[in-house]
Image 1: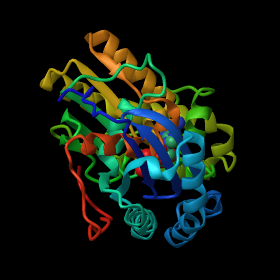
Image 2 (image 1 turned 180 degrees about the horizontal axis):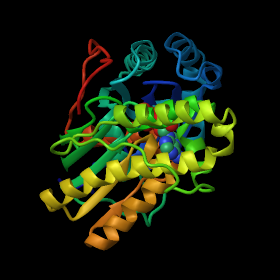
Image 3 (image 1 turned 30 degrees about the vertical axis):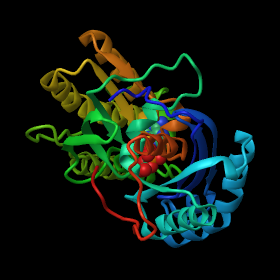
Length: 346
Ligand code: KG4
């Protein structure tokens, strides 16, 4: 597909994202991003994880101001919009319902078409967000490592709307491994960024952690999580201050193991599918160790690596607008009766 496909008038699309604990609205003109407003919910930090009921309530409070702000920053009036794109799933049902219902009401009131977007596809299409003219994009087909709090997948991307999962986690996601191990070390939620920061000060070879042995391109992180827990439990019996004293080494060893697990399978898949371009996506793609390993692999293998800017790795509506644009050019709209899906594959 020629992604430079364009239509005669500027097409402004409003995107709405509310799948988990970030309320976000963005405006794009084709793939060119005009605004991206994200209201993150701090309320969950004290619980060490997202509380679904609190997330839905916060989305209700945030959605109107966030959309208002996105229109204001983009410098356009809502009457100039050509369509409304929204995250239909996967995600938390209560959270999805807020964004979906808002998008439907807003589109209906303005007589605009609706575009339903798969949140996971949108993470991958974050690699096509333009907010500066020099940005290059992967060429189709490419292979994407999609790593977030809920998913770890290797995806063959044939076109913006034709993606195939070639490998995925059979239990926990990479982000869950980061977050759960961070929790047992007493680090705040979400733990991934804290582990990343502390890992830079530690010795990655200090501890050996277990790696899964699974056929094909699938992942598993539950064994690693258990081996981390047992290591901590055994060492804490000998030295109650172990977790604090060795925190940086623990983080560095854990991060290195997660990155190795992710890259081992991804390398194999990229070699098998003989793709020229490879891309990272999802919240865990913010990880500095993973970004480094991904770029190094691309350099060694002569492939081109694409990694979204940090702001577009986490949940955001910019990626929803761009995914919406790719469906808009295909006239791929949905009806008002389209329900949100808590679980849905790519
Ligand atoms: O994609 P995302 O924003 O939400 C989901 O849709 O799941 O990803 C959130 C996940 C969390 O598990 C968080 O700990 C992880 O991304 N994360 C990181 C980093 N930044 C965010 N993990 C490792 N290193 C980071 N720098």
